[in-house]
Amino acid sequence: MRFLVHGSQVELIEGDLVTQDVDALVNAANSSLLGGGGVDGAIHRAAGPELLAACRTLGGCPTGEARLTPGFNLKARFVIHAVGPVYHGHPRDAELLAAAHHSSLELAREHKLRSIAFPAISTGAYGYPIDEAGEIALEAVQRYLRSHPEIALVRFVLWGEPALAAYLGAAQKVLAA
Image 1 (cartoon, rainbow, N blue to C red):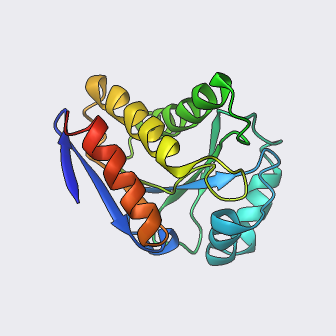
Image 2: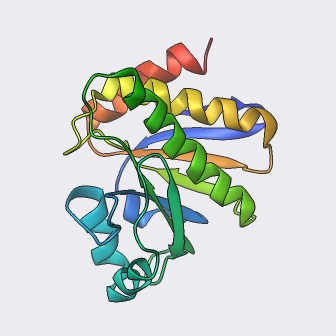
């Protein structure tokens, strides 16, 4: 499904993030940036060993921030490694999740990237409830696009029908309001 948000396209699709042909993929990374399971592992496998070598030069990344590397063997030219919070049910979790999205978009803008694809950051092993995460992510994107129309496309690539349904529900609240 597509939404027009402050002149930019926001898309929600079910699919495989690593196959997306966009300027940058967002990796739901851990703070070491040295690979892991889920989305992180899939991106590292698809990009090839050069991605891990590039990540080793970055010295990690704090929760709520993001770092940029080339995409290597991916269709995407770049990978933005965003570190979301482990869910504890505290208000700070939402702030850090929003910050991870904001930091990712800011890196895309700084590098003149016009299309970016996000996974559902923090909703896997980090345990963030997907309904809440979807609202926080979409609100952060909407806020960012309000003053940064140079990002033409923000795509959320969700793994499985339940994740897509959760984000569609969040979009109805946040973007269609």
